[in-house]
Amino acid sequence: MSQLLNKAKNFVSEKVNEMAKPEASVNDVDFKRVSKDSMEYLVKVAVRNPYSTPIPICEISYSFKSASREIASGTIPDPGSLKAKDTTMVDVPVKVPYSILMSLARDIGADWDIDYQLDLRLVIDLPVIGNFTIPLSHNGEIKLPTLSTMFA
Image (cartoon, rainbow, N blue to C red):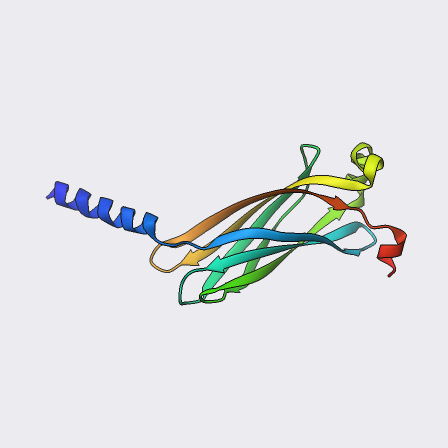
């Protein structure tokens, strides 16, 4: 009896592993706005849902690093749902405090940009399977805004 149960478990886990799963990629990281204490960037993430039913996103967590230091992190609870059989654009706002930017002056001073690593985790609720995490890592560089871009 236990052999039959183990075979059934293995069969189900193989089928679950073979199922198409949602996939994500970072499309863009852009300057959004300046406030009195921070700069805000907007990360645009494309998430493809292969299923014929919408899927709720439980949460998005992110870590924004530069020069091997975390300069921003956060969690966005319940950011919406993924459209059925389509790609959904998800916006992730990232606030970077000025105090952190000043500590990165050496990296910024040379070319007026920040080299960064962005780590994202999208937790979605798949029917029958439960919570499923899509890990995503993206490296790039962000140009800091000049006075002309801030007031344009």
